[in-house]
Length: 120
Image 1 (spheres, rainbow, N blue to C red):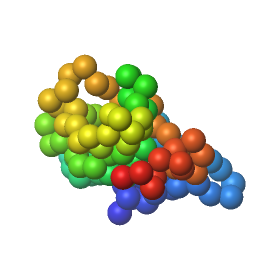
Image 2: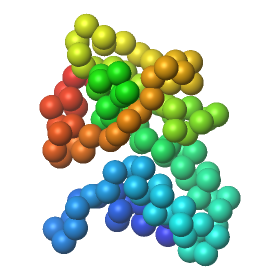
Image 3: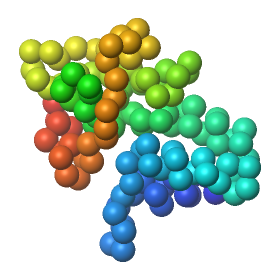
C-alpha cells in the first residue's frame, strides 16, 4: 500500500505542489529502495505500472509525440506506443523493436501534453 500511496502522491498535482513526471517519480522512489520500500515489491510495481505509464504523453528523439499504449515486460523504459503527431507519422510502435526511437521526455497532460490526449 505504501508504494501505491507514495506513487500517487508524487505523480498527482495537488494544491500545495506540482505533479512530477514519471521518470522523476521512479528516481525518487528508487532512492528509498531497501529502506522505505521492499526492492522486490517495488520492481513488481514498476513492472506493472511501467517507467512511462499507459496513457502518458511523451516526446520522442525524432520530434514526434506519442501516447504510451502498453508496457514491455523485458524493458520498462521502452513501452509500446502510438505516434500521434505529426499526423503523417501516426502509427503503432514497439520501442523494443525500433532501436532508433527513444523517449526523450514526458509531456505533462495538464500543460504541454493536453492537446495530444484526444489524438489516440
